[in-house]
Length: 381
Image 1 (spheres, rainbow, N blue to C red):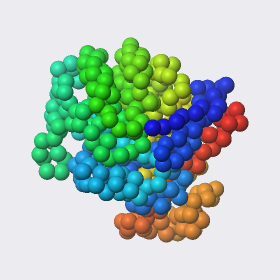
Image 2 (image 1 turned 90 degrees about the vertical axis):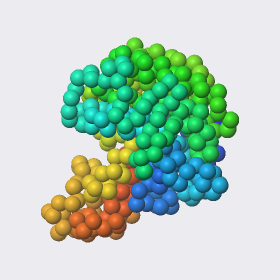
Image 3 (image 1 turned 135 degrees about the horizontal axis):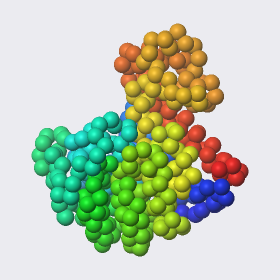
Image 4 (image 1 turned 120 degrees about the vertical axis):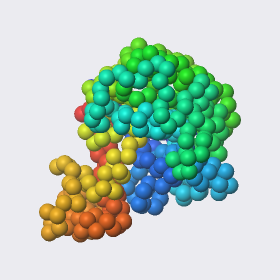
């Protein structure tokens, strides 16, 4: 189980400082939750991840079910021992893959539409099904991205897998909607998610904390209905999931519709959002935890984040640059390596280059959030 204590509520916004205690450590909130999809933050080992100031990770239930399988991880002593991670851990439920391998794949869209150019009309009607999976009242039939075999994941199975994986915090199984969803489809989807939330609670046997997920797409009526319903079920915390509309302005509205209906004493996690420019705004909206692949995904592509903007280190102009990535950063990368050297590694497609930028980005993001915690404490946010 977990303990969550609010240390300070901001007088200027809905931001708050907190302490989240799990069996494996103490997490200061607000907090970034880096993504360890397959029980690893790509290019880094667990010791290195800890050195980036990371407090808690989230691993992916769907992908770990595919490989190596939850039975192997359970036999190894659970995820913490399997990946030698001493800190706190979350696992998602697999609900995001309902979106990413479904309508997200069909229409090449993300959780916020503006990031993915394309159609911006409501084209997902009530009875529509994705091309590569089938969504039913009992769960979702997937086609394995590894070998094409059919897989089923529903609320009972998602909970059982997560119990075998053994993270400190697990999530209820849900359907993550796409931003092209019509109201009729979103309402039908929400009914499924609410049904699955109750089944997840009924079938959980472990002492792990479980978060329920608020859905409802970009529709105020549905978001508020979902927040009230999920809040009433007795979850240990809340996830805010699904698509977040057509712009970041819509995302802020969705959070403002949702947060007031969630129990104040419980932690709130925003699923899958965390661009640098988003972080302060979502924290001001009352978010305690948020997971995002941005620092690691961009890092592997040679994009480094700094206080003066991002650097595309694969560009040849950096090869003769003797400066660190960021003069004000205290991470070991900025203390020991130049932009020129890292640019060479990235251009040569050396794994070490990806590792160095990933490490810096995580350290930079965690320091950025650390500074926001300080501002909340000092009454500046």
